Each structure stands twice: as C-alpha cells, then as structure tokens.
Image (cartoon, rainbow over all chains, first blue to last red; front, top):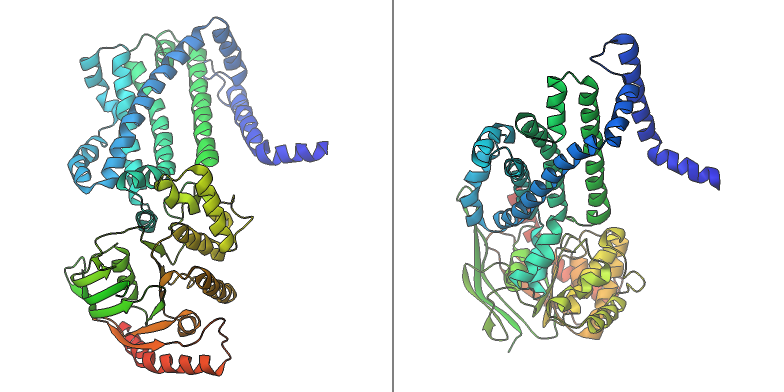
Length: 258
Length: 260
C-alpha cells in the first residue's frame, strides 16, 4: 500500500527530481573541478548567499519589486489584449483596422522600447509596467484572435439553430472555445515578461532582480549575481508550471475544434 | 399547405479564383408536416447545400424557400439541425448541459430545463451518461446527444445531414432503428440527407432522388408505403430498394465520371 503510493509519486515526479538534482550536481562538479574560479561559484556557495539575502530581506525586496511590476503589466496587458483579440477574431473590419498595428509593433522587441519608455515615463514604476504591457499585449491578441478563427463553424451554426442570439453565441460559444488559446498566449507572454523586466531593470531601476544583477557587476558580487539568476529561473519555472497546470486542469475540455 | 416548400431554388458558389459553381438549379420540393423525407443523392450532388439553405445557414442565389408560408431568412429554432460530425458539440459542457443549451438560451429555469433535457436524453437512450463530456462518449452516443439537443427545443422540424455516415456499420444500423422509433413517438417532420439507399428505404416515408451535380435537382420521388419496423430481407423492402437503385445508378456513374 505504502510502497505503491511511493511508486506512483516516483513515476510522476521522479524524472523531475532526478533532472534537478543532476543539474545542480553537474554545476557543483564543474565549478569545483573544471572551471575553478571565484567568478563561477558552486551551488552550495550560491545557496548559502541566498539564505543570507533572504534573512536580511534584500532578496525578497528585489523579488517583490520585479514580481509586482510583472503582475501589474501582465494583468493589464492581458485584460486589454483579450477583448481586442476577440474583436479581431470575430469581426473582419476590426481585424483589418488593427492588423497593421499588431503586425508592425510585434516586430519591435520590448527591449528596444526601453529607451523610449524611460524617456516617456521616467525610471519609476510606470516605464516598467508600460514595457510589460507592451510585451504581453501582442502575444495575447494574436493567440486570442487565432483561437476565435479556429472555432468550428458548426459550433456557431448549432447555436444559431438552437435560438441563440449573437451576444449569447459570443459569451457561451466563442469565449469558452477560445479559452485554451487565450491561456497559451498568456503563458508565452509571461515568459516574455521575465526577459523584459530584467532588461528594463538592468538599465534603469532602484530595485528588482535586474538591478541586483547590475549591482553585482558593479561591485563584483558574483555570488549575488548567481542568486539573482537562480531566483529568476526558479520563479519562471514555478509560474510557468502554474499556467501549464491551469491549462491542463481548467481548460483541458475547452477546445475550439472538437 | 406543405410545411416546407422549395420553389425553383438555385445556389451558386464562387470559388476563390472567381469561378462560379452552380450546385443546385430549378430545385423544387415540398415537405408535408409530420413527414420523414429523405433526400438521397450521390456525393457532390448538392444535398447538403439544400439542407444548409433550409436551415438558414446559407441563402439561395435565386428562388424561394418557404416554411409555414413565410420565407426562410436565417437560422431559427423552428428548425433543429443534426450535423454529420461531432464538431458541433460543446466539449466544455456535459451531455446534459449540451442538451440544455437551447433552453438555457431561451432563459428556461434551471430545474425545468434539466428535467426536460433528462427526458430527451432518456428518449435517445443516454440515461446514465448525462454527466459525461462528449470526449468521453462514443461516436454513436455523441450523435444521440445531438438528436436530443435538437429535439428538446421542440422545433417544427429536424434537419439531419448524414448523421450516421461517420459511424461503424453496426452502430449505424442500430441508430437507424432507434431514430425510426423516436420518429414514431414524436412525429416530428424530418429532412434526412443521405447517400445510402438502404438508409433511405429504412427510414424514409418519401425519398427524393437527386441528380449528379452540378446544377442538380430532384430526379424522381419514391413513396415508401411501409409502416412500423422495416426488415431489409422483406420482398417489399427489396422492391423499393431496386426502384431507388434503378433511379440513382446513372447519377452515381455520372458523379464518379465527373470527379475523375
């Protein structure tokens, strides 16, 4: 009984656990025997430094600064992007009107917009949130619109023949059928948000994980740099897992085609 | 007055290259209330086009389609539709929620619509499966959901677009028997599209045989004076089968020749 549960746990998470252990093991061995240098600290040293930075509150301060910016921009960008994407997918004139914007702007990377953002909004929160919105909105729009156009025409026809109005079809058919596409768009946008926030904080910020990296370079605090890097990796991994899990658990049965 | 009449209906599609294709031309048919009407024809003869126009999904290029003496201008809950595939079902709703969909759109109260939906799920033989999602059900069961979903709305007629064509032979034959018995109880007017002579003779009160497309229309009508359960081995059944077969044989040959 007990061993069976263990075996099941192992079959689900065993691979993961092994993967992570091997990652840190290889890192440890590499920094001890291959590239033995203060510029490449082993995970044990990084971990000790991380604990210290958690204790004195520095890491949490940086972490929460970055996370708050990401969340504010990500939520605002999604709230703007979803209705625009739905409208573009549903109405051809809207699509034609807005496609030049989305098709033009999505090729200008958010990192390239940092200079403009700082000139417009200063080095405070506004410029960071603007950049996260910018990096979120286009992916969410494109995915949402693609989801709408992937809806099987018979789903709409069936609703019409069952007496649904246009508004009802939108709420009860188009929206749920598009949900997996919306969530996938948001998941991709979240990954981009991490890239963007670090780049923005590297250039202009008073706190944040990117600022931590930059300070680390200025003052040669190599351990701090690695703490920041590991934090970014773990945070991104955790958030992405959350999204994957919610897509699987919540939206698995939602699908535009079948 | 017939429930439905097609008057000299024509439908032309334009391809992306700008080439016109006339699917049906001078198509005229009348369907009486309470009738089980089968429209039989070779593939590509425009029988689905006819159904789409009556459903209100597409407008005829010329001619008129009347229901109860009024022109059909768009989809309406007067005409319930059962589609060939399962892509019209809502995968995020359970079987019973799918069946309730039309009633929910009509703002029928929850307890009442659940009760009515359950009644129709029982009629189509899906009791016990109501909490399952379409993905968990077999092809035949999914078609039963579609039939219940259309019938619970109490439409004036049911339009069925080759609803059993994608099922395996055993399931198809079973579904035909059950549909015949459902029709015996409800006496809903049915327009049933099929390319299968056997299916048409099994189900139809009247069979309209279509010519090969393009510019298709009804070539001839066969009245099936059989009531109740029909057996494929009956002499009468075979006589009807032969009669329809003689009528459609040349059209199938033409349709194959044109496709090549």
